[in-house]
Image (cartoon, rainbow, N blue to C red; front, side):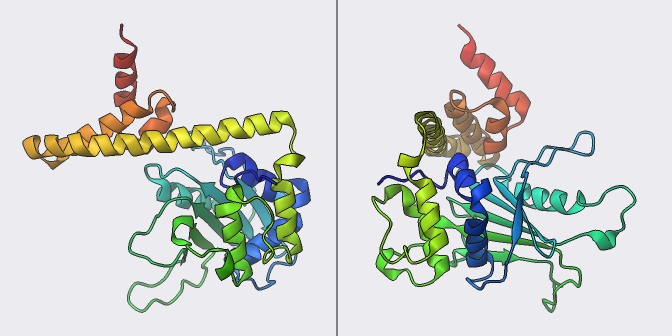
Amino acid sequence: MRFINPKTDYAFKKIFGSAESKDILISFLNALIYDGNPTIEDLEIINPNLPPKVEGLKDTYLDVKAQLKDGTLVIIEMQVLNVQSFGKRVLFNAAKTYAFQLQKGEGYRMLKPVIALTLTDFEMFADRHDFTSRFVYREVSDGSVYPENDIELVFVELPKFTKELPELETITDKWIYFIKSARSLASIPENMDNIPELQRAFEIANQANLTPTELEDLERREMFIYDQQGAVALGREEGREQGLQEGLQEGRLEGKKEEQRIIAQKLLTVLDDEAIAATTGLSLEVVRELRETMNEP
């Protein structure tokens, strides 16, 4: 057996967001949001994309979106690359999902809670040891929760999850291990095949069940992700060295700018201008100037 990588957007959506995935998604969300308790009894998987309702507002593209039986909306995103202002994007998507529930003439009482579940293949919170973090609105001085605490942000940082197969105890452990390690497995582990939904996820992820076209598309997407990660890592390493030299000579600010420009130059062949700007923090105008310079004879 060989399994597709659940961390790619295509595979993640196929496993958790397809028509036959409802039971899988229920088990997955109960594990990651509710500590394995059967809190979610039913849900509906819905179109995850939110086109803007306000002129000039950005589109929202999510991996999976579901509405629970009580009306709560859960938006799920698997993020492999640590891009500029990613934390703000998570908050933006959650706030947009919350605000755009209402139709014209409906009152605020119709608003339902939103849970944004984000899985990252990088560390977001360097000062936290736990691989799971939950954020809600709280009063600053005494920590009391805001009465209408309708937006909750849940993060799972995969690099912080270090348990090996024999150490997996809870259903939460097993789902996170599946996301992180399925690509490297040759069969369904014995200590994971007693969960029907997890076994079904492995079956969907089995490459033998994919068409040649699906496999080719998946491999292309996975290679693109590796190219992105490699380009960013190399750009940061070289940029850090040159940026440090520049920083010693011209000050920290100029050194940082030079580092950003070098990273951007490394990404010109693998990302479009908007993605490079988001990744590096450079303005779109600067990125376009770099591309024009690269294309000069």
